Length: 339
Image 1 (spheres, rainbow, N blue to C red):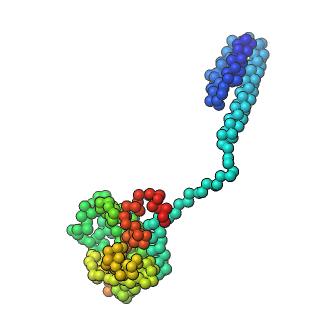
Image 2: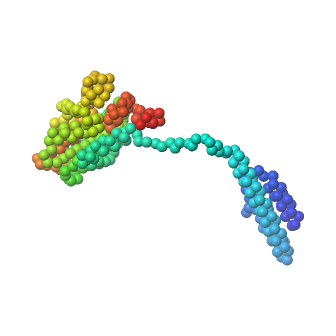
Image 3: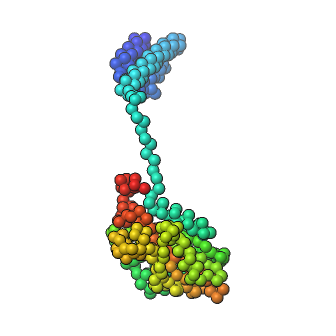
């Protein structure tokens, strides 16, 4: 038995001293000291040893185990120290080099434009309200005076989940949710993402953002709408900005209009930016249709209101003179760094 233990010890020590990686050392530990290792098999064969010799043999096995473990730890420590020294030599730090700059991100052009719009309307006493992007057909169309046979509900223009659920094509549905709460008066804007089945090009995308606003109170007139949006335009584009309203048609407002602002590049004289017109269209607006108020449980004989909607990307493109909407979504760091 002693000869076998000496043989196991010699082989183990030779293998340990020849090892050059931690993986090999671990493999030796398992092969010699593990549950199925050579030393463990000797202990299992103790039943074949005479009872009076078992204490002596057990002590011999323990001595061999202790010696092997000690050599293993010593060799492991030497190996780790050698590896640390080699790594320190390889990882020389030149303290004269300039420090690395931390790459700090910043807000996206859309976010900058949205925060500016929110700041203006919050300053006028408006509340920022959000709603679901996956909406019921009723809130996206019917409650906005758009009946079932209206062209705006064409499946070519709209992403339907099923007959009653769709990806919203406008954030106007948020206004209906707010009106249905019955808490009046209402002064709100509803920013958010919307979806339409548009082809991607310089001015269109199937996913884009809109900011819609609405006021409902007693004695609200078109003069309130004009004054509010004129102030908004001056805050956004400059104090000298003038506004112009052109008659238009929207199913959920009556009367309706599209609002233009004087070109903030040429002051209305006409330039390349405004295509020589001197004016730039920025939003649609109008007085909330009495039927829309009625469907939301508001008496149109007592209350009136106005609403407007502006494309967030359009504001960002105008403010920062970006000529291709796709740049906003391509995540090109060379473009985004400019903001």
